Image 1 (cartoon, rainbow, N blue to C red):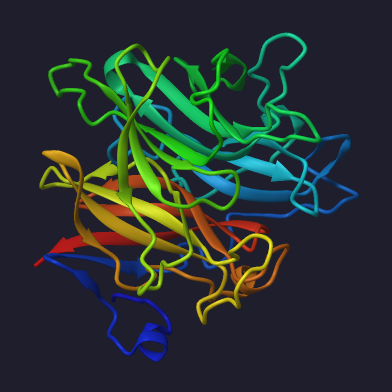
Image 2: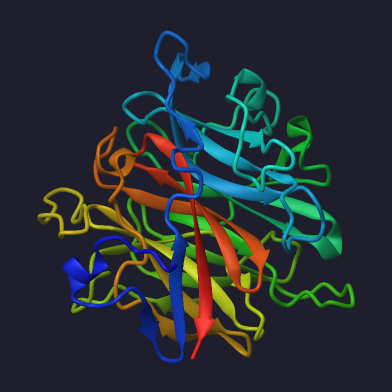
Length: 361
């Protein structure tokens, strides 16, 4: 049974979110009935590498498949942001899923799960908000995350890329020497829609959120030189002043292909905006999840878009935590039949999962 608790009360509509000929429904809001990973205590942290402080918090889960076939595989893991109780400083880690659990059970993160992918003297991945994907035609896996490449007096937020050809081995990941862009961005996901089923390698794309903090509009960028330089293809998803997503947007995971050839893209909305003097939060809280369907023949053409939040803070671990009223996703796993497991962070305190399905009229 389609299950989206409370939408009829909040928005005066039924359980189906309809735009054009597409609808996206939540078919299981609590896949395991509890969080997949919860915060650790300060006395028994996951690591002590968060700027010399205990890493207790788990945020921003990003699913990474370990096999070349991304469709309907449970062999993979989650990149995570590990943080102090105040959510900063943060580092990146990766935890493999326990096999034969459909990606829904994980061992407790430890220091062995922390990513050290940088050059000598800068090995530790001190970063935020990972997003991960694979490129089967080159047998390469990627994770992007944001680092402060500036100074304490003039910080920056720049996306870096790390890659591996043996993704389950955390020591195999190597960070690119240069950041993706020479401007700040608040989250970027690599995407390879031009790669062919015949093994051909096409132009690389990324969904980027330019801006220092909390997002803005969402742009498409492309690269034809092995992810070294990027061309801005323009904004394709903007905030809408008269809609629920009127404040700031940021990229979720890379778009995933649907049975009809078009693409499902999930995006995050952060309502704590403007940063210096934020407006009161709306009824559905601070961070919530939206969706859009992108045209396979013109990637910046949005065929359909959520008219209400698909998922917002409702469960106890989403309503209260380090940051109240937050659901924020960077991870998605294809199950087949246009059905997907979505991995999200709740209240900057837990990692959770729910199941969605895309349907056409």
